[in-house]
Image 1 (cartoon, rainbow, N blue to C red):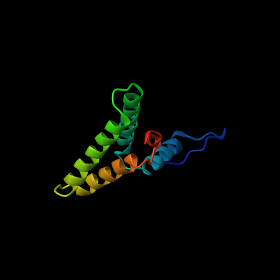
Image 2 (image 1 turned 120 degrees about the vertical axis):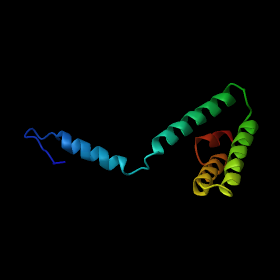
Image 3 (image 1 turned 120 degrees about the horizontal axis):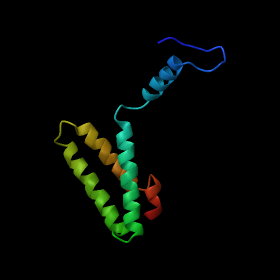
Image 4 (image 1 turned 90 degrees about the horizontal axis):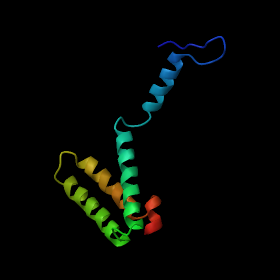
Length: 104
């Protein structure tokens, strides 16, 4: 891909493609779906609390159960690193490391 600067000073398509590729290389290939899923789940949990479908304690218990399942899976899975990372993230959320902390 060649760098192209047009005479009017605007960036050519080759430059835009290179910038997009460089930005995409900064994050893991599968990070976007995971971030989207986490954001949607967080919104659903907040809505469940706001609508009084589940209590804060029930949501905390749900998250703790999810973390425990991944802690357990990390000890006997070929993907133990992934399960450990997922469990650590959920533990962090339960501990108040993101916007859910307003409820705990």
